[in-house]
Image 1 (tube, one colour):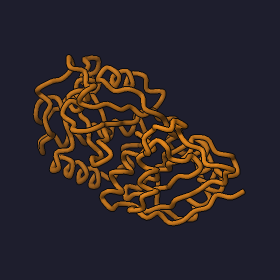
Image 2: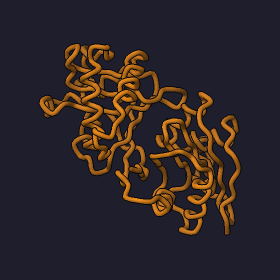
Image 3: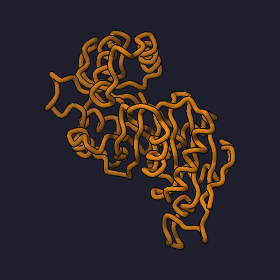
Length: 288
């Protein structure tokens, strides 16, 4: 009983079907593959007969993806995403983890089904910075909370850079246990400048002193991905995060998703108020 693998072809129709069938968990990978980004492998589990996510004969093809197969995608940001069945036999999970390790991917963060991520964790030395359950939320212009939409949401400007650097450092420290002293400030500044130039960071608050921010980390045929939602401590409790998310949902042309730690009840409540609903979960592993 063994997992079989082969290299990932970004244009492979079977791979694209797997990505579409993964729902919210596949949005980021869908966008990346459509842009010709990343590498990885396809895998198939031994099975007596194909098993599908739904048995309805009239179900869309995207939902009739067999659950005995999946893919591993690796991107330039040091991330690995595993798309596949939610549950896996321990031996098969270990074999897939071995196959991922054999690729020698320069990853620091892995997301995917619990069994595979647990097997990867066992192969990593030291104590991870984060090892937890993430919940996906999904929304659209049609679901955005009308009463929370604001007209003063704006793209971040160059004058906001220092404030955005502080926001990112504080968010990474509180959510990902990243010591601010270990963050390459030049890399962070360049990343924020790129987001400002591309118009993918949105804020509420005055120029040079925003109160709340979020980033659109990916956008493409799969939909949009919100990340980096942060409100400065002195402005919390005013509903700013929910308003910012609702306003960005209202302006989005397609489905928008994000993921958040299962334990983060305040953030999850804000996303629900904004008009987003739970859309699955995955395991997150962040190495030190």
